[in-house]
Length: 283
Image 1 (cartoon, rainbow, N blue to C red):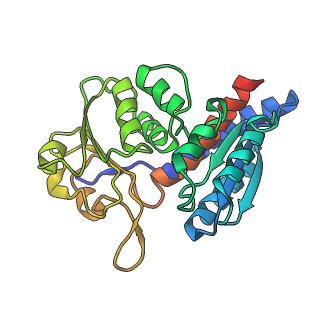
Image 2 (tube, rainbow, N blue to C red):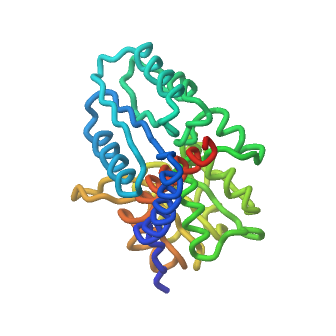
Image 3 (tube, rainbow, N blue to C red):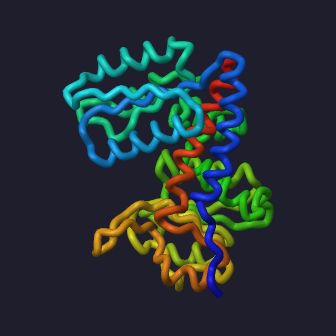
């Protein structure tokens, strides 16, 4: 068996085309969807991520405002900028690129963003809405993973056993909630799980999101399972790789996401989807 690839680039193109149509419709009515992106400091990886997000906005007909600030920016100054953007009717979504300098409290910054503009889906209000099944912005990476499952015909996951490896607030926890909402039976594994393979071998769907190379190997995968690899790591040659041993697992799984070209492009795409939804709600 050789797994079929879930192509994040191809799916992203489809979803971004829809975003562009919706953006054009809003713009024609005098509402240009706007995203503010704030970058504090000079983290090279963050600079690349921000550049990609700004380009994606331009390509899809969204207006973006990029604010770059020195690492010496105080927390009070950053909170003041967020307050101003919260009040700006031309801005529908606000994204503060993480990580922030150590003297700034990430949580305080995230909570300062209006829930109506929380297009990253990190605010407590967004997390709470997801928990109880109310409308709200979904965290972009797990939201993208759900779209990938839908693209292969897995929208209602009733009867499916899904295992999430990782319990972060950004991916693991919201991923589990979205899978539950789709009727899957969900197991969350993490650093305190004593026998990871015992759980993953039973899974119809595995989402690996711990940032650790080869956390999922072929002997830990049920034949025919769907494997979603959220990890972003570097191998010994310095090449980008995920959390999954791709070469081994592809011979066991039924579907698998590649790295790169899998979940990565979907994360930015779902940011665009959230932003267009914010603009449609605000019109």
